[in-house]
Length: 70
Image (cartoon, rainbow, N blue to C red):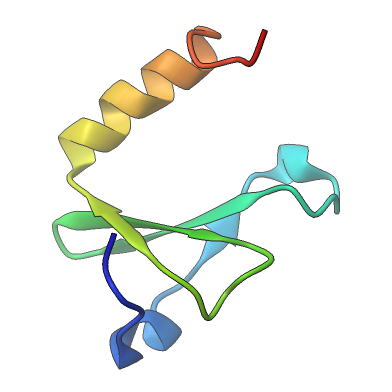
């Protein structure tokens, strides 16, 4: 994770429409060659930065249910 630098305020954050207004969400943003993640309830907290390839692998695992809690 990276500390929340000033540039995080200037990127276009979005969250899934599946969240339906519930609070347990993450928001993502694209900044050049990195994908940023943050907790939608802690917008001033830590930010996770990964590559688009890592994002693709993560999204595939999420969609496949591989990371669901038992």
